[in-house]
Length: 364
Image: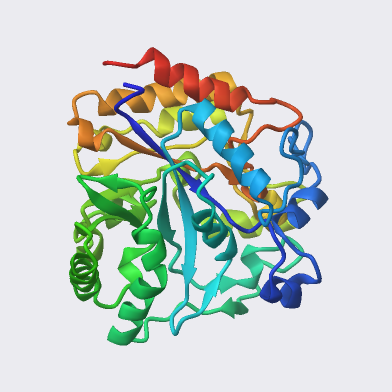
C-alpha cells in the first residue's frame, strides 16, 4: 500500500517575518515566537516543544526546504499541501516560501495548494489576547468574477509546474471552507475553463470539513472529494465554547483528551466511502496560541500514532488506487503541537512510525 497510498501533508509557511505580522505582533514575529514562549499548563504537559534537526528555521532559506523534503520522503509522504492565503482583491499573505520553492528546481517534491479561505482573528494567533476579543486582523472577501480570474492567474506558475500534485491527471486544489464561497459552482467551472485554456486537464477539488453534519451541504458536495477531519470528535461534543471559557476560571485547561482515547474516537465507517478522504493526526495542542482555552491531546507517542495510521489505512484497502488518499495534519504546525518534524523528545520517531506503518501495509 505504500506505493499506492498518497499521503498529503499540510504545510504551514509562517516561518519568516512579514510586514503584516511585524505590525500586528512586533518585529520579527513568526510561528516560532509562540512556540518558544509556551509553558506547561498542568503536570506532565509537554511544553515547550523544541525542534531538533532543523532548529528554529527560517523558510527564506532553501537549505531548510531541501532538508524538509528529505525528511518527508523518509516518512513516506507523497506531497506537501501548502496553505495558501488569498483574501480577495489580490491580497496574499505568507506566499514567499511557495514562490521560492517553484523558482528552485532542486526542490524535487510534489506539492499542491490548500486555500485557507477564512478571516484571521487576533485571538487565534496569540494566547495573550483575550478569547473574548473578536478583532479581525484581515478579512476574507469574495469580490466577484474578476477576482476569481485574478486568483487563478496569480497562481498559474504553480499550476503549470511539473511538480504540482495530480489525481486523475487533474490538479489537486484543497478548499478549507467551501461553504463560505458565495457561488462555488461558478468558481469551479471558471477555474476548469481557465485550466483548459492553459493546456491543463482541470482541477480535482477537495473540500475540507471537521463536521460530519456538513457533508450534505451543497458547496461541500460540489467538490470531487471531501477531506473529513474528526479531530474535534475527540473532545466534548456539546457546548465547546462553554468549556473553553470555563478554562479561564481555573488554573488549568479544561479541554484535554488522552491521545490513546482520541485515536479510537477517530475511527468511523464513513471513511469507507470512496469520496471521503480520512485525516491522520500525530498530535494536537494549540496552547502556544490559545493558552488555557486550548484543546489538547495528551500523551501522544510515535507508537500510538503508528496504531492510528494503521487504523485509518484499513478504510482504504477496498478503495480504487486513485482514491487511496489520506491527509496528514500536519507537517509543521508547531504552535498547534501538530507536526512530524523532529523534536528533542521524540527525534524522528513520528517520521519513522509513519514510514514503517506504510511499509507494513504495502501491497494490501
